[in-house]
Image 1 (cartoon, one colour):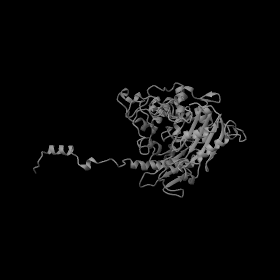
Image 2 (tube, one colour; image 1 turned 60 degrees about the vertical axis):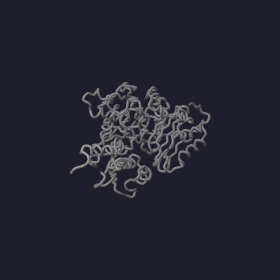
Image 3 (cartoon, one colour; image 1 turned 180 degrees about the horizontal axis):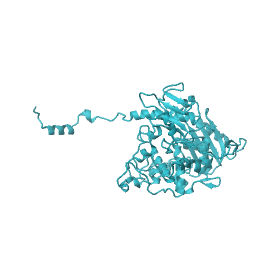
Length: 484
């Protein structure tokens, strides 16, 4: 068959002149959809398991509060395609035949651990566990802050009681139902001056910290830096994946601990690309993948230290560096308890791991308001506790100094702590805060000798503003010195 153009010319003409249909093609299909469905099951498995066996709340409460975060939870409190195994302290979300069922099981000293899709309850005994006795004290008979004994008759002075109550009402009586404050704790000069809980919660209730965990992680890492076992500005000794034939040729060896803690590693981003619940760290949080292998597998796409990018994997890499510096798996599991939690009296805090025994300290910690108050007091006291220095002042200065890569965006972030943005002029610039999804905040205000803890189970668009809360609480201290 003859044509008016040679075949090669016809092909060139087609490539050079695409039709309107091909020119308008767009990538709209969610190729991660099936991962998202599996991870959605895993999210519910972890939240439901921890809600029941770590927080010790009822199934009705868990569906009403913890699972409100989910758009389409499996089943209801009355039942559905899920199983609660009380004897094993485990849950399964989903049924065979479609989306893989996901399972999570409570482990002593750890909290709930997610299993891989191909694992069953038979694999529970192989999951990490931490059987470490607590210090021999009775919290109910030991005075705050080491214990929970607070004298209700103590007459606190130096603040406006009515203004503090108004700030508390501001926190609890939100204009949107999507913001649900479950606890508020205000500590002034080391003493609890206000404590309030929503119905269904009390002083013992542990809930997920989400990314407030990052501030606990950086504290533990700082202890090793203070000891000289880690260096802030030296290249990290990590086994990057895939391994290079000549390790020194891998540009990721230029990444330092400072870069990771400042959220400016330069590694390929995942969490802010709408993939947090599809791949990346989501697979370790919710689907049983190794948190470390995924973190080590990211490519370097920017010069370290030049771009701020909030990534769970940066924290996980820093925690992995901590593990390597400790050098022993059991010592690593015990390190947070022995060096921080037990010393502060944080006996209600559980640091969870993935199934490989690596701490997921970018998010997976369960604790209560008072334990976060103790943690905030450590920073308010510049690293001192009961006459012992736990972290150096130099480390506190590092975590509260703006990350250089955040300067163009308002200097709002330090080293795994959040700072008062440049544009805020209504709260002291020296204040700093932990922050976690669903409204988890421990706010330290050195100028007013204050720690403010707000725990939430927000959902939907959320948007609870910690600096607005700080502003409202500070109205109760009109005579206190202020410094910006």
